[in-house]
Length: 88
Image 1 (cartoon, rainbow, N blue to C red):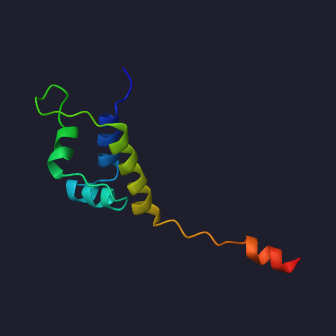
Image 2: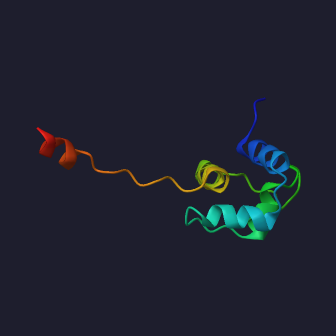
């Protein structure tokens, strides 16, 4: 069987040495709210009664927040259409 979203989330958490507080802050960077108890449910064993499957939306928001956390916010694009039109 392949990796689940929960497995990917766990591996990223360990690789980047993130705690629950860090993950909550990273998700907040993309205006996505997640609680520590929800995170605990994602990181539990699959056989645990309070285990919760990590959905695509949660993982996607975490990954987008992690990009901002590691690289910083994306710089705003300059509108070059006006400057090139004036030069002609």
